[in-house]
Image 1 (tube, rainbow, N blue to C red):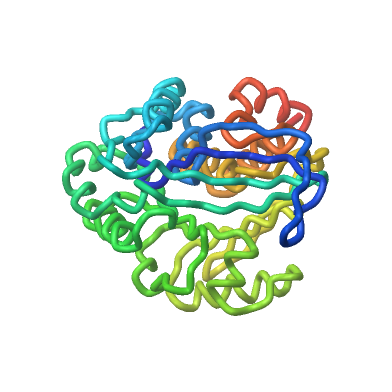
Image 2 (cartoon, one colour):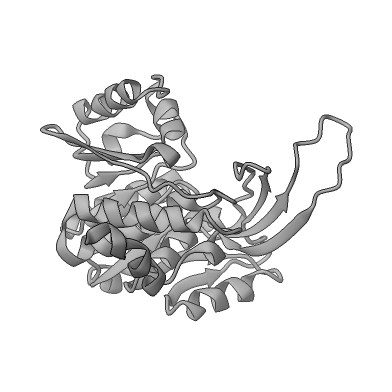
Length: 307
């Protein structure tokens, strides 16, 4: 089984801080890392380390980061046929600030990601049609996202949309053709205009999206687990309790692992359980892609829990 990730890549510039500086203040930060990230790339890598064949469609710039990003994809065995350079444009970058509790704040500069166009999807039609799932996020132009959803519908390929970063410009009616819609609780609140502080809040907000025509809404809730809701049922997957060091990329870890598991047997509940464990392991280490566990580590983590 092969999945296609049509989306973003970023260079993660991660600063580990004690607190955010106030306006005009300079603080010393204890640590810094530079790594490959971006929601699309993170999800592709997570799926790849879980053992799935992945095709990546994205754009990089004409700077010092471009070749490193392409090499990183290849290191994980990801097909880079449709990873293309854009002349005279920067690659996407993401300054990330992680505090002592492991929580993060992120800025993104999309750069070359803004140049991934609907025509690129059409150019890759032959290979995309061979995929079992198309995975999307919102760090690329909305027109490209809508085109990819229509492409999946036309060719009977399931589509998963992670509506992140959330924007009220997203036309819910246009994304109802998606098979899976996977926001976190913050994104769910932005998209629905409803509170998401409690389980009941989350359920009501998710239900409002189902009422608008979405088929499967999966809400990732960090340490509170994840909710799967359809028109007929709802199910919670509890989070695994771990000592979080850095939550950067945890949602992407969940989605990538979920996709890898789902295309194998189409079991949503089992895929969510596995994805929850994968994401839990990822937050016990610093970084985004570099924190993702290998398949063997995931199996070892799950062993006592399936006996």
